Image (tube, rainbow, N blue to C red; front, side, top):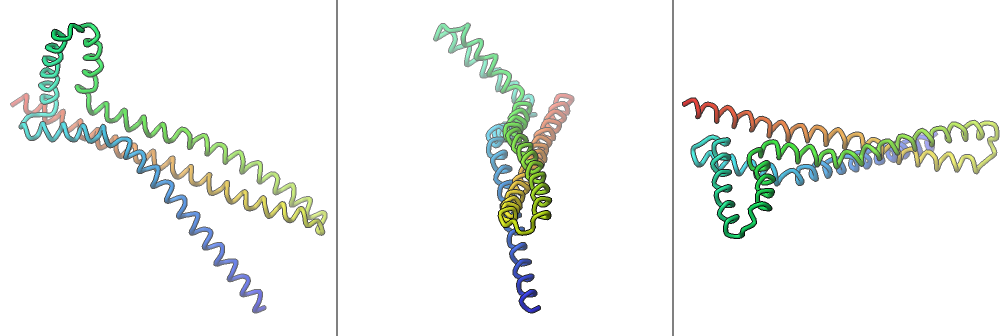
Length: 213
């Protein structure tokens, strides 16, 4: 009985260690993917934050500041057009540049959601793949359990069942990791977009108030 208790405790400790390692792996991967999303979104958000800071230091609303900066940029580019005699091509470049400068909030949100989608899409495919693999492995396990029951002396079947159990645990871990990472990326994209959206509302309201005054 003492040996049985020791073996049971050993198995319990092993399972606890495995679960701890799995949790650490999942947490580490989800944190990594969140960091990637924030890192890729940072330039557009930082550009918008800098623009808002300049507007505040200038004592004007963000929208007014954008309009003034855009007008000055247009004037500078028109001078370059005359000097370089490339008015038509430069006009196309102006239109592209115009859309980003005059809508920095929309540009930031577009980058955030675009980067989130680029990270989530392969995870969705990976999740589907692990789901199919789990279904196949579970079916194999049930079949082999039936075979082992009818032939208790078949050591090869027992070994295959053991391998199958390990594969199932791996696929379950991968499946959990993809599901939780997708959720984390979704929430992080929402948080970042909501922040930019709040900036837009504040900037628009402040700009309207200054115009009324």
